[in-house]
Image (cartoon, rainbow, N blue to C red; front, top):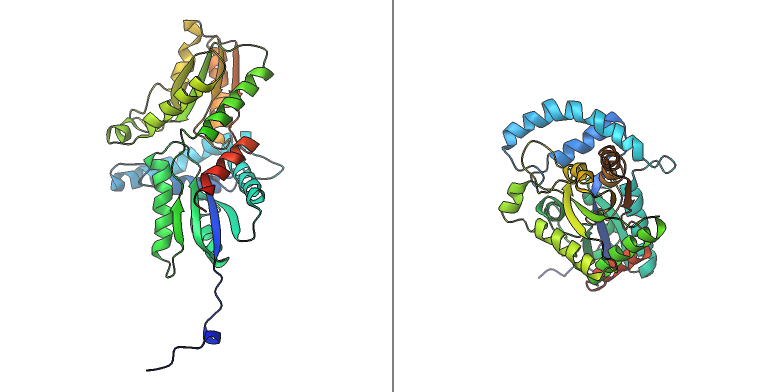
Length: 336
């Protein structure tokens, strides 16, 4: 029997460390047309996002959407772009979240980083980076409080797609959805209460606006709709204010029916129903992004005021608030 290779003949391999990877939806590298097109192409090619005939969708996407939509999307990104840092708000806040969480652990054997499901930095590159650093245990934290197939499941798909091509795979643990986590609910309540203290009026209505999904996804068994209502119910039960809450859904795309009521259609009719002062929060977004800063803070506000509304304020996402970082810490801690 041949002798087993001596210890000094083996290549040195880093091991014994734990990686924590925060994963958000994604962002273009800039608001230039080509960067926007590249981002949209990756995003809208995900079969979890668009469930339709893939041959037909290929032609619709590449011949129509990717030739026209990047112009409008680029203009919208330019409105909210962080020019000083030259990054989108979503990437900025996700990077700060990772940095603060890294300091929260402050251990040599724990690496904290972030990735994007679409765009850069990619999940593939960041998992490879953590593996090279010796992380044989990687904790994946999808930054989506409410589970949905087009978001959380899509992250899992991409993570396992990366693992398929790895000879020596790290152990992977995925943090589940956290729509009812007490730290999450408390952070939302605090952010709303702080906002109300900073404005000069008591809102007639507090709207919790979540990113929509096609109605057929819900009918096929996606639990997202239920988790959104659960989060709002828990916030309403916890908060020390008697203002009523209303759940709505935003960011619909295409002609098919999506989860209702729609945020924009709701804001259009509220003034005529005597609701003139509105406070809106987007609990499903862990970081401010184009959907919150442009679609809500700019477009939705203008729409509401044009239809006769008097006051409209937006509660920022949890972003890099300390209670949000504590939430992320607690979510990950049980897996270490």
